[in-house]
Amino acid sequence: MTSKEKSGSSETESATPQPNDTQDKRHDWWRPVALLAAIMVILVLAKVFGIGERLGELRDWIHGLGPWGPVAFVFLYSAAVVAAIPGSALTVAAGALFGSVLGVILVINAATLGRFDAVDIVEADDAKQVEKAAMIIRAYGHSTTETLVATPWKEFLAML
Image 1 (spheres, rainbow, N blue to C red):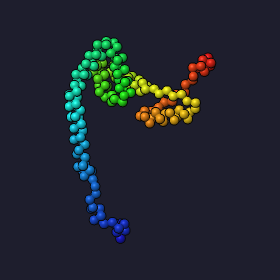
Image 2 (cartoon, helix red, strand yellow):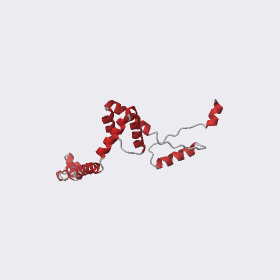
Image 3 (cartoon, helix red, strand yellow):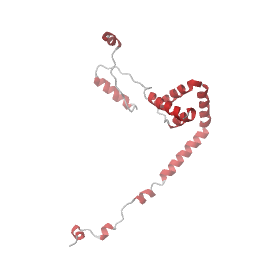
Image 4 (cartoon, one colour):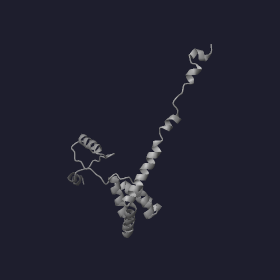
């Protein structure tokens, strides 16, 4: 008795068609088409709303500020972080406006500052109330919350 006969398998069982990757790939044809359609819609909307001209005006305004231009850009970028606006276009704009080295430095600092622009201050009597407030803040869309213990001003002065 052979091992095939013992296991009860036969040649016909292994010859049954199994789903393979080519069948799955035939059903995924719409993904690249949807991506191209989305890119085309974005380009048409950019042309209709004159995004190119507006970016040119922004560039001229930032250059017109002189040495304060990078500071204004950092404030704009950090405001975009708070507003949850994707930073890809602003990051590319930083490289075009200030060069790659200064642009990277400005973007890193602006993105770091942007996450600290929205601060929620909670006064609580115990840690459970602070935890509850942090959960409520997270429920309204903040992805992270940091809780820091603060000392009231009068108690701080008394410690000195």
